[in-house]
Amino acid sequence: MNTTKQRSAAITGAGSGLGRDIALGLAAKGYRVFGTAIANGEIADLEQASGGKVALSICDITDEKSVQGWTRGLSDTLGETGLDLLISNAGILTPGPIEILPLSAIRREFEVNVFGAMSVINAFLPALRKARGRIVQISTWTASLPLPFNGPSGASKAAMEVFATVYRAELKQFGVEVVVAPAGNMKTGGPEKTAAALARVAAGMTPEQRELYGQTFESFTAALNGMQNSGLESASAARRVIELAEQVPAPIRAAVGQDSEEILKLVHEKSDAELDALRLQIVGLK
Image (cartoon, rainbow, N blue to C red; front, side):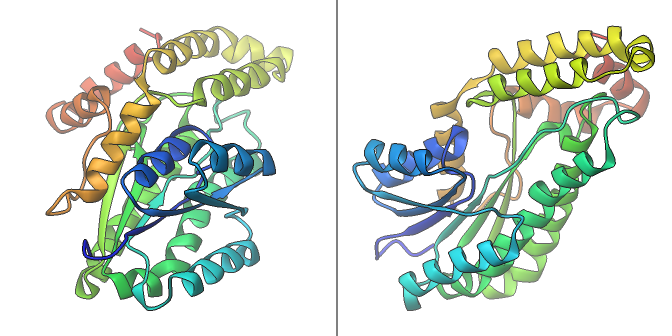
């Protein structure tokens, strides 16, 4: 990556949580930082927190016109220097038993976590090629060890990891690097959102669905809320992501958080039967 000029970075989902802390961390290191937000309040908050060093724009990454507007404007601003770093961070979580989740909700998760991410990456590739830049794809350890009642998240992130792997091979000739960063449990603002999503699923169950899944989903809810609330602090997770963004040579895959590192190791060491038992144990179903 070019270190002789002021480096530039674009971050999706930069208005809150992990993305916000990454934006602040990169700005503190002297990057020109740009990002997407979903509300004007996020823009004002981060402008104040960064002393005006982070420029956010409202952008729905599932809306191709919105993505093209943001990426084209930013690419024009950067000009021939191009974009040094793209942090593909935006994502959503859709928990619940697969049987009762509306397919529209699962499609929405893929629209954000996969197709939205790809839309942004593709739009920025000309600028990334100019700078021989780097893409960091934020993922999750559940892409490698999917959990019950968390299927859409694990599946969508696993799909994006496949695309990231192919991007890495296809973009190598242009000097563009792609890093997959599976994150562990984090205190990034996600716990409150996750708890609310879990509560909505439970409240929306019919009596028949509650008879089938109520008890096990309650155990899963308690386990997941506990894991997230005891996870890595947001600022620490952001520092790790920035470390991976600047590491030379670029890692292919690197965990964010000790729990993620341990899970990824176990996935390679354990049999399928052992992993089945582990996933049940993790969510309190064994």
